Picture 1 (spheres, rainbow, N blue to C red):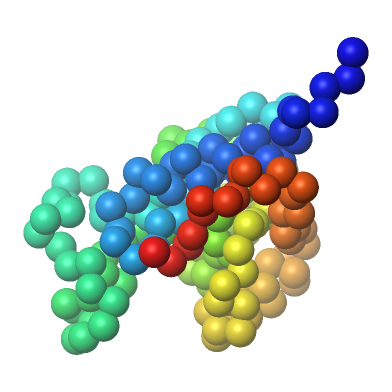
Picture 2 (picture 1 turned 180 degrees about the vertical axis):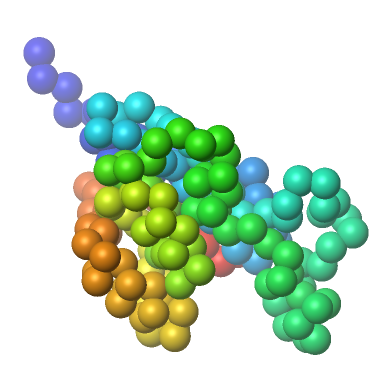
Length: 163
């Protein structure tokens, strides 16, 4: 019997990434990541938030203002969190599923960890300097970039990178 209501592996792992994003307490941008090996086993997940021990109530979530009073010097991005949460597992040849295309800093960590493919949902900041630098490094290092194309609209209907 053929089922038509199943989801693909890519949709499944992107769904895990979106679920991880829901853990983020960032009021503006929630991003999730899921790292998977070649046998479709989940190696790690992550979401954007402050480092362990840094209270969400004691650090700023602001996007504008003096740099030290914004979230930017403090937040760990979902991709880096997923890499760090792998606790030394071999990520060589793995895929990372992310709800938002990685910035240049996360691209460096992705490349260094040995991840060979990024499957992403949104490329909202495609024209930003950070994303352009990210793509340049990723392409130069041979990391495959795949935008998730899905017919299963229920997977992404409620997803918003920006709230």
